[in-house]
Length: 139
Image (cartoon, rainbow, N blue to C red; front, side, top):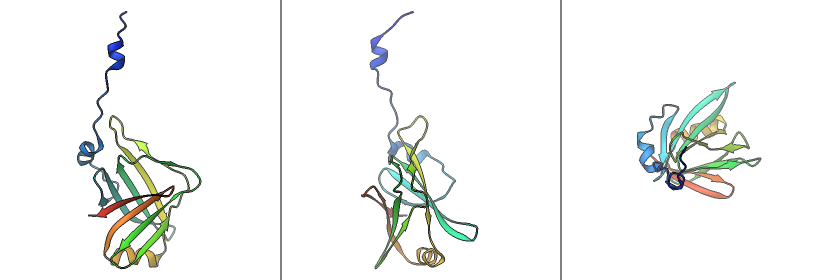
């Protein structure tokens, strides 16, 4: 049995998110926004007569939040609307054999907010995790 330090020191080449994201065929939502290294997928859904937004962030964003949740802000041309996450615990999951992650987050909203988001022109969206903002341009 042979042992080699060179095998231990070899770097494992993982593809960077900007190489992986275009190859991901994600059908769990509608592509809604993006930045250089992340894609945001967003869909309106309803559970028990109450509307909510289901979002997925796929890319290099990795986060783990306990007890505080996050916010999602829709930035319109002359206004903005901020929603709170449905769950206070949020965790990114690594996509196998890549350097990318996916993060699933649901947001509560009412009928009035849903209509505003659907009908007004949105320029960008912004997630706020633990006081740090991540901005994505609408596609």
